[in-house]
Length: 400
Image (tube, rainbow, N blue to C red; front, side, top):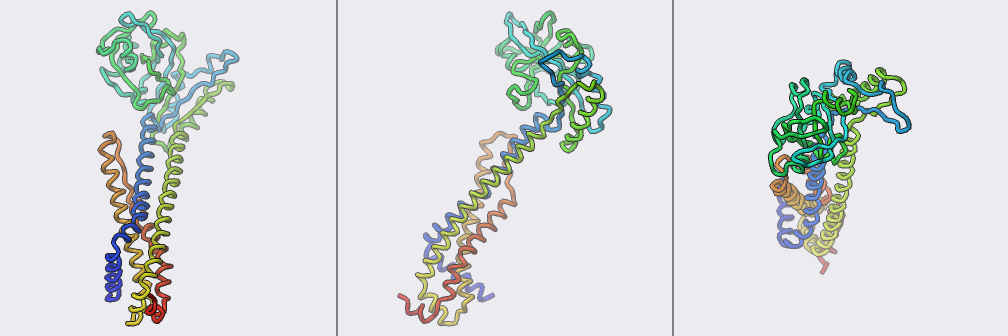
């Protein structure tokens, strides 16, 4: 114990004698260890952000569409129907919600203004699956859908085009020969940039009224929601089999999910994390080489000191431990400072981020940064320490 205390005391005194050199040597370790913590934090935050955006659209959603041929008209028996929707809900236990939609391009008239819109007829369950955000008024309830009431909800973009800053709720909207009452303004929870059935200027009406415009009572898209992400592949497979079994053999359906996008996002995040961690390790490697170079210079400068210690009885391993301790203190101190910086940055950045986005800090990254930084210091400090331990007392005492 006394030897350890003495070695630690001598090492600290040596570093105090060269404060600026020790600080500059540990600078690379500070940067490297802070980089590891920040890289993992940024990777986790970006991954969480991307996944939350995708899941907000509906990570458990599976949707089916008829593959339409441009060469010839397809039989009506190929089309998806409300019976398919009910059959899916009853036959596949992993499904917790179903919905169907059908859309048509129309023009609407309000306050003398005419606008082209996407008119979508929706069944019950659509709001639960798509998780639409209602800004004003309310959504279509079960009574509206069952009674086929002439009510509708519209997007904010359409509301602004038609009514400016005025509240559109309660206003009339002429769609063809029918007049609808606007009961709400909605938006997608996550912007899909027109890739979903909902466009920037869209009107949602009860599904029972869409036949007035399309002439048929069929679905364009069948949406189902699985109980959990793990059930999505099974639901996708069983829904495909169900539709193929209920329709003629010539019918072909696209049954799709967001699982591929979710997996791609996770893979990209993982690859980005690995690349950034490699860069952080390179910074630590450079700092380790710096530690080794400075320690080699230190051994040369302190050759006479080493000779005196050996002359008064210091063993070879004590000299080695002294220089290894100095390397450890430089790298360990730098690691602690770097980790503190890496933890402080997310705390500061958190104030500038949206309230619903949290910056997670991985405890594993903290441990990894400390262990790797200290290991780097010890690894690169071994050569100078071993060189110091091998010095002969007589030659060391004669060194000028």
